[in-house]
Structures are given as C-alpha cells and as structure tokens.
Image (cartoon, rainbow, N blue to C red; front, side):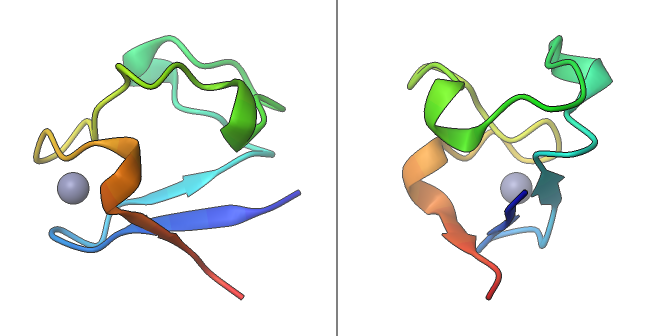
Length: 53
Ligand SMILES: [Zn+2]
C-alpha cells in the first residue's frame, strides 16, 4: 500500500487507511480515487500530492 502527501498542507493519504471524511474506505488505491477528489484539509487536487517513498 502506498502513501501520498499534499504538497500544500502536508495532509497524508494512506491507501491502507482511506479517508472516511471524503468517503474513501480503507484499501482505496490512489489510482482508483476520482480525479475530482480534493484534499480534505485545503482543497488541493490529486495532482498536488506526491508519493511518499
Ligand atoms: Zn492539502
């Protein structure tokens, strides 16, 4: 499972955890999140996230 971090507010999306606030259940893969999804903290788009390696 991968992790991604918002470059503006440092919010972290973890595939293993999902994001209950935006309706993403645990195990939701980054590639399966719709392009219209936004950072729950600052409203940035998926393009504004970088994978944490
Ligand atoms: Zn953000």
